[in-house]
Length: 264
Ligand code: NAD
Image 1 (cartoon, rainbow, N blue to C red):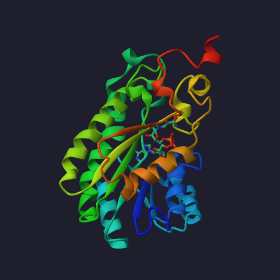
Image 2 (spheres, protein in one colour):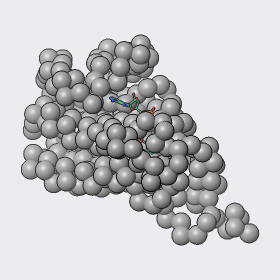
Image 3 (tube, rainbow, N blue to C red):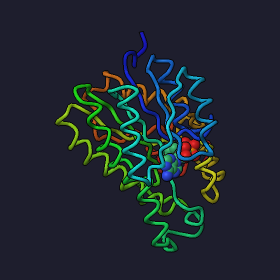
């Protein structure tokens, strides 16, 4: 029996088969979860419908998380189709491309607002709106963060600030929803070549460096993230909430610039 048998999971943030959310959906499907998907806009509709059908689902819904009316409509749609919900995967972030050039010092007011709204506030709005659907089901929510929340990663800029806020939001929400029996955690994933990642100036160098110097000397895959997400959303993780779990092959534990063979 799969670890997520009998659970219904909403997957938010698939853009294509390289998305971290795709890796999570694949692992959830393998573990027996029923899946529904959202997509940000009409352009992604067809691709997300194809992904949904690959995982035995015909449930897809447009939800631009910067729009309250979309989030409300999502709740109504889920109520109609499922009536209840066990898992929410929030795998969404955005900042205008120009914010990844230069430094944090160049951040525009508008870019800051957009990054915080889509990458952080959306988690609060979605959690609040969908909470009634999780009543009595010991629900689990996960979101995706990155090491740039903790340390300076050149060009990650306002997204590093947003991820720090996101991790803090996870702790506050964990407190708020614990009284209903629900949990929320973040996975801090190592770099993965996805659409979102390509907006970051010099991403390939960051990827190369991180891969070379982590203790295992290998890159993170969306399957690595998917399997951790399964654990976090399963009943085995029932006492874990408000946590940020690094799925980065141990990159974050390194105090010097690389493994022995790299610094010789
Ligand atoms: P991706 O581009 O595949 O996914 C990002 C998703 O965010 C897309 O599906 C996009 O449609 C969605 N999105 C953007 N604006 C939206 C809006 N207004 N409404 C609804 N959806 C919106 O890239 P990804 O790397 O899979 O990103 C998923 C998450 O993982 C993000 O939070 C990202 O910051 C995080 N993350 C990525 C990496 C990496 O290296 N790729 C590492 C750590 C964390």
